[in-house]
Length: 198
Image (tube, rainbow, N blue to C red; front, side, top):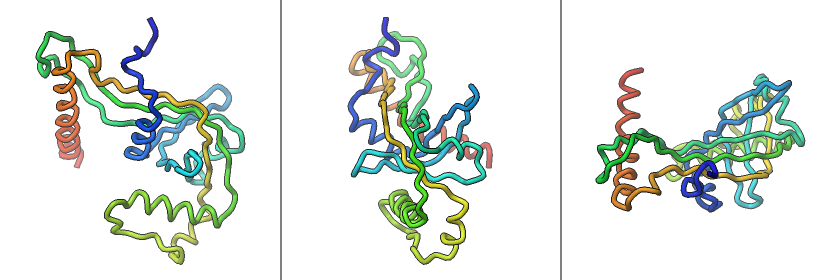
């Protein structure tokens, strides 16, 4: 049997791009001396050429691995939750539903301070949408002061894999119930979690 099951895979690139754009905080994995280095960074999908754009602190040990032609693995995380059999209209077992996008890519470092500055402005504009309550201005002195501590990189995506486990193999009514549970659980669990730690 092929794993993951075909009905839990989504190869529609538009769906995968939507996950990236909606949940841009990615896990970036590099390997050095057979040991993984892992960093969590927002990555922006650039529509014009289909590349991912990111920025990393120069003191992060993974920065040295985000050089030309180094291979990396990227994971984007969509919503997730436990699905109790109680939400189904038919007899089922407990499960966990989730949306993930797994990518592999090749990194290219960008040395231009001008490109870095514009990229930070563009990323902020994207992340501030749709209200744009804050605008990162090009003449912001704090922006200029911090450019030397940030490195910009681009990722050429080599492989795409969507893992969309959403009870697609269940009765249509149960699939809809699982969808509703995913919505409910994500709204309630975030509040409960924040109430616990704050």
